[in-house]
Image: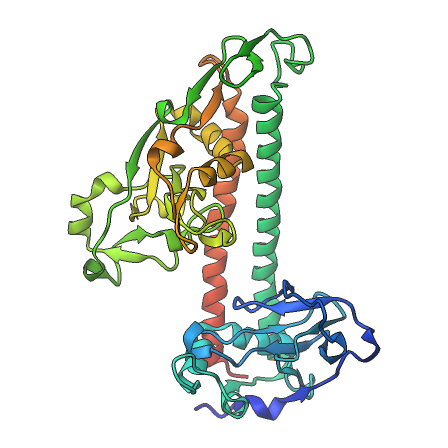
Length: 415
């Protein structure tokens, strides 16, 4: 151990301030991703005076089930001046911020290596709790305050850029959804004079299937008539390698995309034989097995789009890949399938137990879609927005890699 390593317990102290008089109202929870989140706990009939107050630059942590979760949830409060949190969480603070910056300590807690050490030290059966004393005995390098500030500044520059990009992506997605609804649901797309089609007297015809009027020359089609599809393959776990061609499972799917950092891999020779299951940028994936809506993380019928970073990966079972027969309609279909209406449609046709649901391809593909005529250039705006989202997502991936590299180098920090 290097000479500048110190016990964590040397620099921190427990804090136990209760919410007497109910002075603090904002209730927070602690996530496994090491963030404070709005609490979803049922507090009806709960004595809120017994809840702990946490203040800016103080930490909350959970030492329970560390081995089971393979993580120690711990977060630094910086978003608000004060809040309350369950009395089950230890609250602690840095004794002397002139010696150890809270932001620097939080960087150390963010490292995957810290979680592995915490898991190793955890005791108490399968779930494995981490004793407070053992946590305090863990060590970290403590360079000079000037060096700590330099490291924190560099790290925050990257993290702030990632967060800004996430906000930009959110705005772009909202823009795309607004365009889609205005043009393809309300039929107020620009006519030949640049005016809103429907409200400017554009010709509409009544459609019996939908029981509403749609623009003349537009048609209604089942989703299945507009796409080619391929179901995922049931890969064998014994074939997985440490590197090679990535295999993406339902568990790798985020809300809208694919997390490429936790996938399994296949040998390139085996992968080549299974090329029919290969993914391409902007492919649409729909999960056919998952949970009911009470667990959105793995919900059946989740719709995602394949990012550039997942290009050439392979699709595992319990999901289906969709490609528009007419390439210019791919993003148009994606935003239609991302709608609440389609999600509810899939759930309405799902079956299964209380814990797991499944849906047939026949049901997935029977969804009705209003399709513009082939001469329209209305798809270009959606395509451009999606291209920008893909670009920013790729930038965030590499920024995250830089962030992880910086965190991993903390162990070698010298003054």
